[in-house]
Image (tube, rainbow, N blue to C red; front, side, top):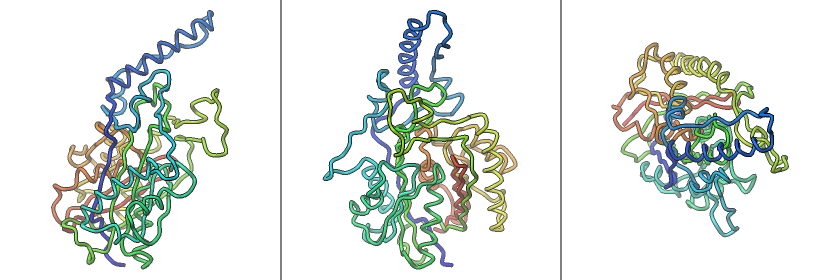
Length: 373
């Protein structure tokens, strides 16, 4: 097989952000109103009052301090607590396509290649905003790229799944250059009325350009030494809402939004992912001791640190396992690429790292990289 490289990466975040302090204040206003209404309805006191949230509580359980969002006023409005995302006209541009295009153009610039040189475009993210036409084909039109485009969904592991698919397409000859994009609008899938999850997610888009090493003009390139993807059924993390569901004002959060069993997830995902990384490295004839960087899915600071400790056999240094959670929160499948994009330039030629994403399903995906220039 030919040597395939990631020759460019790009990241886009919306201009608005919400701090933990702002988010907790909004939630606490909602909780106070809810508790008061329940007191009036239930004089016996049988209904448990909602606990307050706080900036420190959020940081302690997640490592998150901030998140970029597509609609700050709607989320912070205690009477709404949901982003307002306007429907676009047939002549307009959808929000995911707009975000994806911005990240893609940055990746193309880094790869020193033109949109017309791309002949495979994959939008790989947790969810797309419509069934069809595909968001990927809309971005293809906006960029002016050639060939084919399609949407791919594998929860938080979507980017590694997309990268493996693009690599296979280039190796088979069905594409010369590929663009894999993850435009994630996670704040539309979380209940901001749930104290245990209201702080987890942010919105962002990430993209990578892939091509044969000999055809790359980029000043930097990371050779893909190997990819591996994996699934195992679990409903520990779930979002059951889909186009067959009927929206109702009485719909419970677990019927419409993201929900999870956090304790069970913690117990199961750490050994699953660390074992997945180690077995893939062994398959490639590589040792974890030779890794310079672990770009993990930005799920939770404790989960990430434990996975890295199990992989390396010791506590990781901060630069070995960079976190972007503090600034971006959990951006689902975009997170590992954001970590790669922001923490790759200091590596030397020959240095090796692993990009790993994991999430609902369960799903997991590895991309083992070596800096080649």
